[in-house]
Amino acid sequence: MRTIGCVAAVLALLLGSASGTALADGGFTSVDFASAGEIEVRADLYESPDRSATLILLFHQAGWSRGEYREIAPKLVKLGYRVMAIDQRSGGGVNGVQNETARRAKKRHLPTSYLDAYPDLEAALAYARKDLKATRVIVWGSSYSASLVFRLAAEHPAQVSAIVAFSPGEYFDEKGGDYIRAFAKKLSQPLFVTSSKQERDKVKPIFDASTTKQKILFTPASKGQHGSRALWAQWPDNDVYWAAVDGFLDVYMPPRPRD
Picture 1 (cartoon, rainbow, N blue to C red):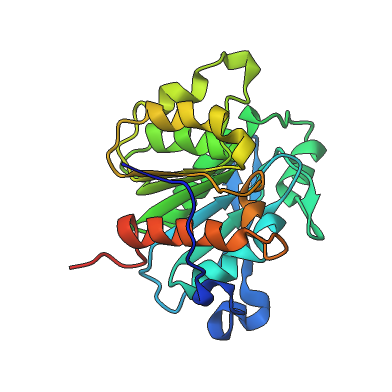
Picture 2 (tube, rainbow, N blue to C red):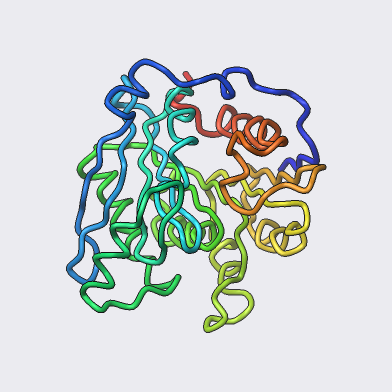
């Protein structure tokens, strides 16, 4: 286990503009796949030239959409990963991108709470494995979805290769105060957890509950941000978050397995 207090290195590779295949035709293809309630989930697929590369599933925070990752996903592709950003049915819009899955769910008068979105995470994982033929899948969540990826990894251990969680918490009052910690205790996969500085005390009990040895808790020395938006270039400390994430991925889940 490693706990990172601050990472000073700035990764120029990550901060440079993405190019080539990553940005061709807007950088992504929108896809739809079935989920619970007879609706289809909308997702943006950012492909890598290497179709056998590790796939990262990106889930957004409350009130938002797959637009949370419009800036982030191309940088992950540049690192060598395949990437898919998903609209869950609990959400709205961000960065000019509306949540199509939420629109479809509301049209069918389906509930759209945080927990109601969990089948959409499962559907994305199934699509990644079956249709995209991904053999290694990282599940990456932001805020409420950062909590749900703990459940996803615990309930599908053979399908989830690693977990990245930006600002997880016990956001589900109806389930009690240790709902996510109970799933964390079941994890065996590599785990990366981060948050803003003030969220550390809420995040750390979930991190500590996991018994996996391959885990990193990163807390910035600066104020930081809530959720995956911490990686947006507009924040002055985005580079230390990127350095921490890249360090975790490079050690525990690179784009291709090392010999």
